[in-house]
Structure formats: structure tokens, C-alpha cells
Length: 235
Image (cartoon, rainbow, N blue to C red; front, side):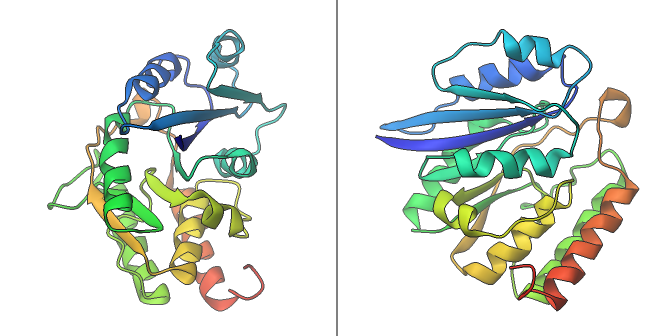
């Protein structure tokens, strides 16, 4: 039986956590596949923790952190626990649609790949409410490609489907949103069996709970430069 591991980092998503879990459970990922869902709550204070404490499903493991150490730290905590053939992360809001899992898995198996990204820009899509956010991600993507010889179109996408053993071999250190960029850097250094597929995406505003900000862009820039200059030290 083939298994997909799904990491769900959560912080203050009381309004959406149960719906996204329902969407994950309902998503068809292919005949013969099962799902393993690892939820890591990053010390939520809005009632999310209470909902998770009462959530019961055989294929779900819930980890409740005692302090907020960042989204990236939550993902890194879950990676060693993954036992599926492939692993993907899933934000706890409703921006990304788990129905796209099938598309990513079909592509990774069809072309014998190690990694498939779900790109929000393939097909010329403009995916942000905020023009600055869009162009910052495009700029960081171009810089990643320049530094690491990759061909990404969207390094900041949440949907990174990665062979689990490969993912577990990366020496990841970041604890914030910069982990998305560190993963991209180190995957580009580790394998050339990487591709992308277009996905659906429904962005939310800061008023609706969007968390990433300008300081995160600076952190991502530093990680890209760091991993280019000190790749031996940082893995």
C-alpha cells in the first residue's frame, strides 16, 4: 500500500482547520494510496488547539507545541515522523486545494521524479492580492535559479511534493517562512529530477489572516545567499 505523508503546520487557524482537514481526507490521490496526516500546532491561542485536541482520525497524528518557534520549525519537527513514499506540506488555511495532490502524484510517478512543485504562476497566472508580494516571490525565484542552476517558477509555493527519504536527508535549519526557500535551495543541490505542475490557488488578505510579511522576504533573501556561499557548512 502506497502512502502520502501530509504535514500540516498550524497557528491560529480556528476558522479553517477543520474544513482543510476535511478537504485533505476527501481528496482522491490515486488507487492504492493512503494518507498519513501529521498536524503540528505552533502554540495557537485562538481555540485551534482545542479543536485539534478533540479531532480523532486513525490516519492523523497531532503534535501540540508548548511554544511558538515558527512555521518552519513545525515542518522540521514533522519531517522525521513521515513514513510515506512522498511528503507534501499543507497550509491550514484554504488558499491551496488538496484536490491537486492527485495531479502532483500522477506527475511524479509518470516521469519518475524526486520532486514536483505545484506552481501558482504556470500559465501566466497572477496570484496575489498584493503586487509587492508577487514580485518579491518572482525575484527570489529568479535569484534561486541563478544561484543554484534550477528552473523553478515559484519557490515559495506551499505544495512541494518530495520523495520522503530525500527530504529527510536535507540538513534543514530554518524555523520560519524561510524554510520554503531553504528546501528549494537544497533540493536543487541534491537532484535534477525536479518538475512543476500548475495548481489552483485562492489567496487571502492580511485582514483574513495572511501572516507572511516584508521581514520574511529579507529572511528568504539571506537564506538563498547563505546556501549559495556556505553550502558545505549548511548542508
